[in-house]
Image (cartoon, rainbow, N blue to C red; front, side):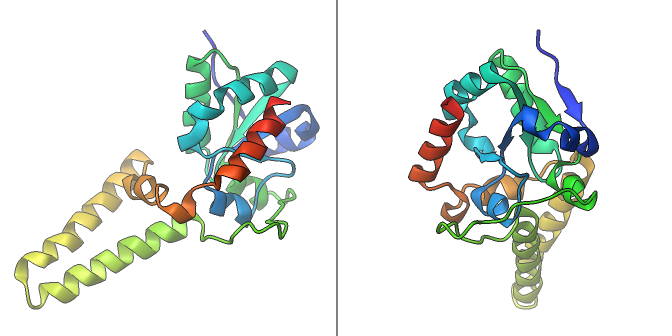
Length: 190
């Protein structure tokens, strides 16, 4: 059985060249800033990428990265189930950048700048709350929308998961272009 390994940013920085870094965030989040040399394979596309990731793991250690460490931990669990060992970056790119380590941004190759997922969630949740309150002035039951969003935010905080982020990640602007994903898989497959 493969156990999941967590690596702190300082540890990863000291050995970054030894890792094949796979960033499991959305393409927009990746474009906004990622670890140097990281490959973008969104979590929802991990199953499709397993052969390429397995090939990369055969050449050296894998380091899975996301914004905070939650999605990369989930990726490590999926990889472990497939018999592929991988480590997760504790605290994700947020902790990496906060400790002053270098971050690469979109390189002008047409990668579109999309808001980070946390910002997309705040916009969607705030808009739905305001809409619920505005429509609630005329249609009393519309206030339940605001209550539902508030409850969802509490559950999100308590469980450290986010259903709204999972839904927003499925929107077209958060999906990799097929050509981008193919190039990444070819690079990982070696």
